[in-house]
Length: 380
Image (cartoon, rainbow, N blue to C red; front, side, top):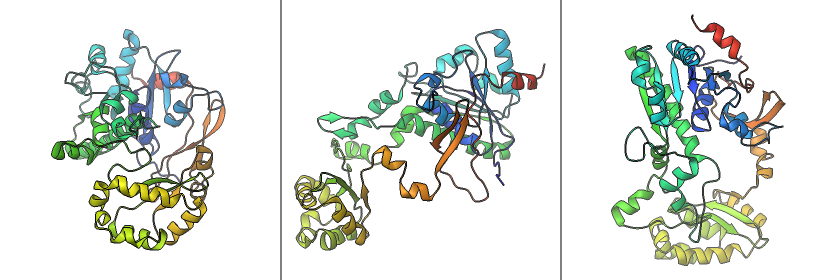
């Protein structure tokens, strides 16, 4: 039997695109009721990005299961009053608009806390509520560039972005975590609170050690393509059959095992220039030339067999067609189906597995399908 951990939690989501919807869908998966506020006739802009999901947008289908869709034109007095009544009864309010837009609409935390003192207010923005960039538009690619992710991605002569909307999604993930923490805090204090989450700061949090090379050594971290920026060896190596093996060695004992049992090059293991990861990083160019040459001597199958036999973390470079039939994915039954107005659509669902609980998979709403039901619940 499905256990709805967040059953009874009511979320009003003035959301669009990715970051807000990703936050609310994660909470809806475990039972929170999400009332998604959409513009009449057009709805969330993500509804119109493509038609890959049997005529529906793949992004929208992926981010909006379990939700209720209500059309409100909050620029009108009547629909704004309806929104305020919904917020008055809500546990959580999520919005991902520019701060000045929210202020202009009269939907700041200070205003809403006056009508609902227990409200947990999660404001998601690109840059934060203050600072010189606060009024600037923000999109995933722009944040990847400004936060330095692109400075680490791709090759020196060919910068690249992360393939998925990583900044949007990590922002949504942090927001869902913050809301969960705030609900625990409210149980202790009886009061709601304001949560502020910016895409820029979420992206910066992903950088971990990389800024330290600038702060403490004045070094620029170069793009390494399919290789790790700090761990050596860690990355992709081309084999004799024009394929790749992926391997990662982040501990010195593994490095020595790689040299002795896989590469059959004990001289590399014994060379002081390569004895520690820091030494391997310092002498990366010389070492990578050696490794590139070695891996070109045999096929992918040969190397993967040797690497796995030596218990070295390794794998192959998969295309999406490989991923959707990956034996581990299939063995774990990780492909789900969600119902939509165009029928069932496959998707990769919520990866959280909690004993005694299962993520919900309720239908993706048609635009405005819950208008009548939700408006009937609004007190007059």
